[in-house]
Length: 272
Image 1: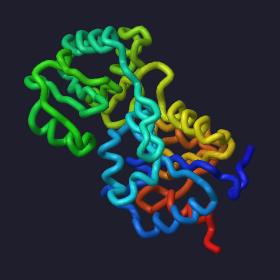
Image 2: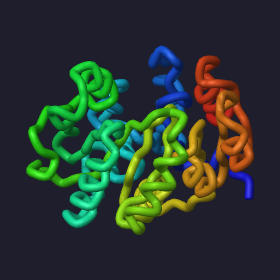
Image 3: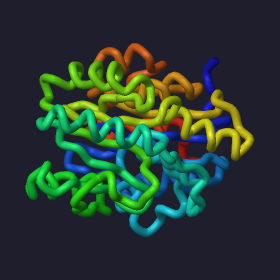
Image 4: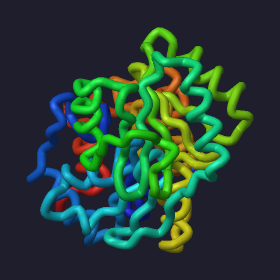
């Protein structure tokens, strides 16, 4: 069923390759104008990403508390300032994955918790830490992942790009569903709790706000956007998305570098 543009109550956007341009900027003043029209239409704006909450909110420095966030691929959900859901991966799953990683030293691992993300000394380089810090604004060195006192949301291993599929299959096979891999591209894999993805995070907000999936619009460009694009009444794939993402979506909009999300939102929430 198609959504009547005047009956849109939730807009969810992925960040990397979708809302943000390749240089990680966006047209702030244009977006703020759209946001005020969305507010008049009683429509919520949700940032839905595999990235850490602290990194995501940094892109909306003076107004992040007006937005909602589905972070870490659905492992953490915030309604404005209120935390409404966070995954707590069981110790058994954490230890199983850490043991598996020891057999494959080329896996560069990041452990993501509620308070911070973590890199383990001796297993990754300072360069890797600094690169990871771009995506995880709260990031700490630790001596041993197994000793970290935090509620763990997900793992974000980096593997050789050409072996991404191989490792996704390996994780599926060896972890027996304790954690589920989702590829976010370029050798990046997220290991998340079963049933946890962007769509499950959006569903928590939908239920909380008393709206329906048909009243939701989503924008995405990657494999971790598929559930969200399917769940929402109107799904837009970016022009820069691969074919399998475009096939799931209802529409294709201009690329992230051409401000495709803002162009489309200007059409959905026209002025005057």
